[in-house]
Length: 154
Image 1 (tube, rainbow, N blue to C red):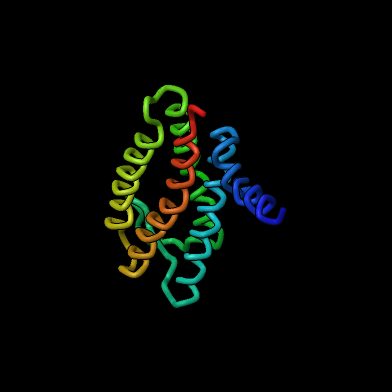
Image 2: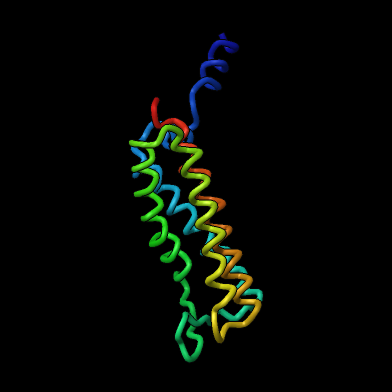
């Protein structure tokens, strides 16, 4: 009997796995965005504690301004919204939504690295952290949503 019950337990998907594969795409996207935002904010807090200045300037700015605590979290959530919309559209209309989503979002992540690279009035260490934070967020959000999309037709 213990063999049967342990086999039944192992056959059940874990809560997180079930959420990613059976819930609506928007909900899996929201979970992915929040997870990515938390991980990225923790990354930023660690680098801030290590002494990296969190002052950055956008295009046309005359001086850098401080990136507030929580700024990375908010940025990840904000920029995940178009990704969730893309995932929902691909789940509905794409022949291979997970593959298409992964290709498009990885390409967009690579393009997003241009922003930190050319940020005026921003220390090199801050530029590196900003670029790395894009990669950290993408490394969390993209696989989670792609996993959900790989089950889009099921």
